[in-house]
Image: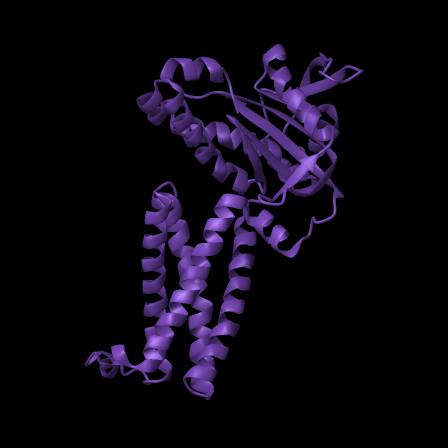
Length: 345
């Protein structure tokens, strides 16, 4: 699931405290059994994850996230080692050398010192772990990875979720016009540009199906502050801001449509050689049908009446009836809503 700034700060602090505890034990056992090791270990262990997080946010995510995976691993490893080394040398100098940094660097004998080499190995292990879990999170998903590791969903359970099925309009004709290779590149750009709005809205990208993204929230997060609606509008803004890029690269700006619905779904682990946490149930099927109805009703966003009613209580946006449609696989007509052209601020 995507994280808000407060959530990210909480997660960073947790990582920092865990890292600090491990580093204190390491330095106290390996280097010196005194207060200096506790102080240095606390500072080094606490600040290294924060330094790596800053690098991730301002360098990796902005410039490297779409590079070749092997090259990214190498660059990340070097950057993380530099961060670890710089922070470690700073506080080793402060607590062990009493601020006498000249003594540390007046010769390079410390490079062959056994304790220094053990520290480098420790730093390499930390760097490997940071890279390993970052890659897994990117491939599997932040919250999904943790749940898979601890087996939260080994047994199916019911959860109350809101889903948005969102896909590119006229994808078949676009693929025929620009070619399938360029179309796949366009879809990848589109998915890249919707990631940040999803994160900011406390949502998570459940999965990609062709040119369709399935986004989900807990019901609380979806309704609070009308996050699911804000997500859709933020994606629109994100694509429009990059319209010049899309026109230059593909000769068009992708348009999209979305269906929004929620309720009780069943979730659990699926698969053995390739595991994933899957959602199943009528809510998923209905949301897909609502998204399909956008074409029939000539709307870009359709919302089930039940979700629109809950969102109305937040007071950020107003909704109007888009019409009643008989969704494929449903016996009764379903009332669908859409955004009023003049959302409240």
